[in-house]
Image (tube, rainbow, N blue to C red; front, side, top):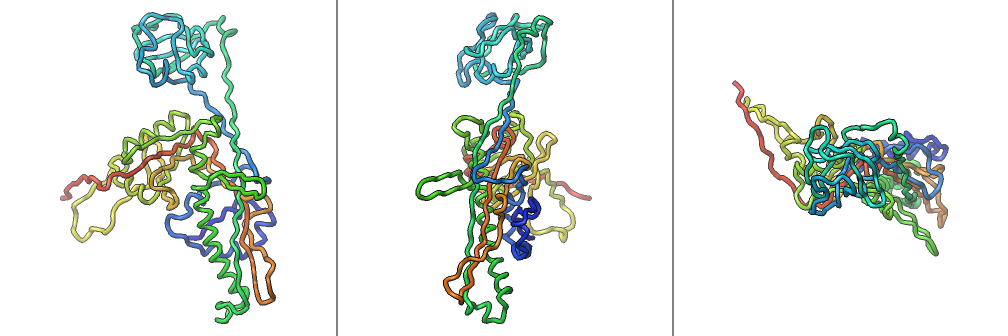
Length: 411
């Protein structure tokens, strides 16, 4: 399997397509079964990168559901008869307006007014629609189950506007120098300069491919100015955990130990509840071994048939079925063993800078006996939909090492 540097199927600028040697040697690069898989799965951005700095847009999504009272408090937020100044969480009041019907526990109420400064609401009455008024503790969840408005409410209904958070990332330049002389071993063995160059370019491309593979996952954001200007592009893990100085939300789930089926499903639930639609779970080979042993992930049935039908090895999990939604489980060797990234793959992007795609350049030589080239290009990574479409599971220290099989006899 060849390595896709992500330029020939993304863009057709004259710089990127002008190097047939780069294109040809890339076809024979094999980094192993689990290296570079996330990089190659990233898609092209909607526009080409034409500057060292670029913006990633994150559109907010206001939830209609939430929790009452002060999050984390154990005190009662609502008693069983008050209709005014009912405490709500700060996030809760963002999505509520006059006429919304809330269900808290088994009680139904209708919002009369919203105080966004005090994070409180007034309701028309307690225990409406045949329900029973009750005391509710802080952090009790509520759900908006409908709208019960009247004509006069229209002048008091407030609109909700979603916002766009800007996340700045940078383009990072990669270099790989190729240097050989007229007395190089390849030439002494009878290869021409072009043939020797192709071999050396292939080896350089392997090193570049390995670098791009780890950058896409482990790269960090850096813009250093002054005497020496350095740029680094934030990869998957950095972007999923960077709240951009509090201007955008992030979704994380701390496993705090062994990764279990329950924890994986809880992380998925958290992501779907935020409005995301993830479709891929990226893990290291080690974490993949834990998932392979999940009972819910495999419904394997070991059948006792003819003894000569046994096959060495074991079954593996290629997908997780979550309430009818199928998420692929994929492996990349550059992922740490302490995390698992649940992503919406179409929101994970990579792009070479305009007129600075990966290419082979002749460099000045120190003597006429020396041949010197460089493989170079500038690339940036963008993860859109952070805080909604992706969630990062952290704190994984282990997982199940044995699988429970069901057995059946075959007559």
